[in-house]
Amino acid sequence: MTPSNTLEEKAAFDRFSDLMAKLMVKHGPSVLKRRKEQLLEAIRSSIEITTKPSTEEAARRMNAYHRAVNSCIKQ
Image (cartoon, rainbow, N blue to C red; front, side, top):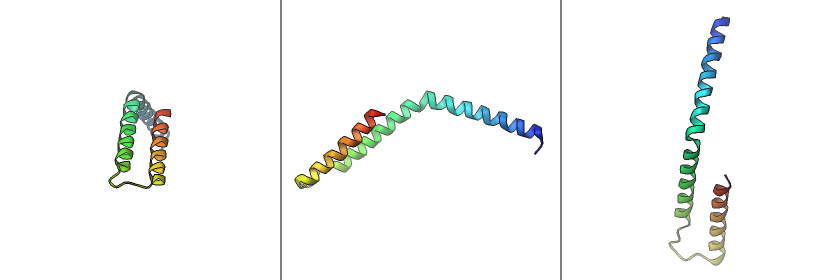
């Protein structure tokens, strides 16, 4: 590699890094919000009760749901 190639590659990488940072700042919050909504929907659908679970099983499912919701809220 010649020194000019290295400088050109460094400049290209710097431009790429700047672009990615700008995209993350601009779109990051909406992407995170969408992912949280998808996660909560997946949790809700997995908790839907088709048969009456035991009290212990229902408590376990509710605890898992609350942990997931709380982890999404904290972010």
